[in-house]
Image (cartoon, rainbow, N blue to C red):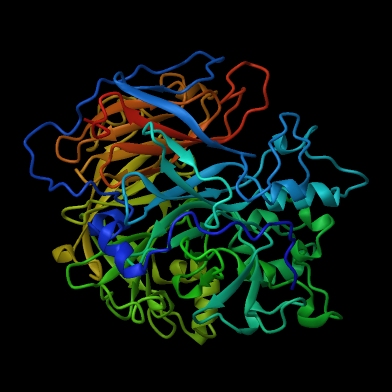
Length: 628
């Protein structure tokens, strides 16, 4: 298997590489909160001061709005955009979209999404690595959009689209003026794409379900796709999550498609529904139609090789990313880690589709700090669970383990590998509760309460029945759910749940429901993150042209007090965008968020320049903590 290459090995590191132990003690591990997706300030959550100390910004309903507006007393500036140089000798971005696929391999990818700031021990609030997912591509990638000729896509266009997926890792630090800058040509800078070789670990490594014509051993996968949210481990690695991977493959044999739950249950297109990108027309790897005359039937198993958690070590640019198959395969939105006092871990994930489920994975062994040899493979053995929510406010985590809960050969489950490749089917079998598009998960930094964003579900009440946790028919605005594990233990198998917030404008349907918004209105909660002081940050993703979202205007970043449930609007993005990706420095005085697929010309905001997904840096004018 061969990677598409056009990259430089980079210069020598701009600083000595610190040991993992020093790094954990000095930066990332100074407070465990900073590695749980709850970026920490190191402050105890004991202050009597109001958590929300900023003035709300108004909604922006102007159809030509093309800026980022942040709360008074704060600054927001574009920091890292699609096409910016990442690797050494990368060419500049061309505003007409004419950069080649070789250029794109060295530049920031498109549609920034989940991200994390990893601090260096020498100056954790002034120096670190910023790791940014690139979820998918827009037609703006090319001068004239996606082109077709006699039913085929141009190969060079497809290669550029594949190069614009994946991940960027960039070294950043404050300059002598205290301004954050990217370190050019740093040896830490790295691009992962749809052609980067990745190892397979866990129960699917070498399994027959992973073998293809190009990889008869089933142990090496090229690339990662549709990386949405993410997670961070206590040992300082980054967890990429492969979300809508199914849209990239095509099985032209409708009968075979129906016989493969790994295809039909996950929405792989077949006759009557083509793929968005059409990669399968020129790249055989994305043609999942069986070819019995070819080794391993060609690429019929290639879809099985996506939908996983991919672990990346940002501090080792020569390391091979690893797909951790014990965590299951679905349209995974996040991999948020919760760590108990005794080292017991859980990795929480939402499956972002209407009527899908909430999952967690509990490793078989506890995490042990400062034991490097003990921790790296913790994600290869453990138990995958799916949530069943009962109407009385209690719930149970149902184990997705072969031989248990009806996951037997008699019911069509041949072994644990089949269970993991067909996680959705297994969740159906054990009676999991269908949810309203479960997306990001955030863990409260003090009590480990679990918050889950449920973005919306127009099928609720028709294809999925009403449920107290999903209480609205034709749910256009979504809600946020709170789960409390028994005794606050991430490894518990029972929990209690409640509605934290119902999004959207209050109406007669909501008057008899709990969880209404106390404060600023919003729709479709998506990204969630806690800071170290216990503020819950909420990012939205809705179509701002839909009439039912007219009162919300453009997409927003809001902040909620988990106790009072007050919500304030902190930031509004440009028309057509999604607000996503959020991370902080440990002292919470620098924040980054992502403006994905802006619709007009952001960040140039001149009304004519090609729009670019952009990471935005937010600081407070007085240098204080974000949110105060």
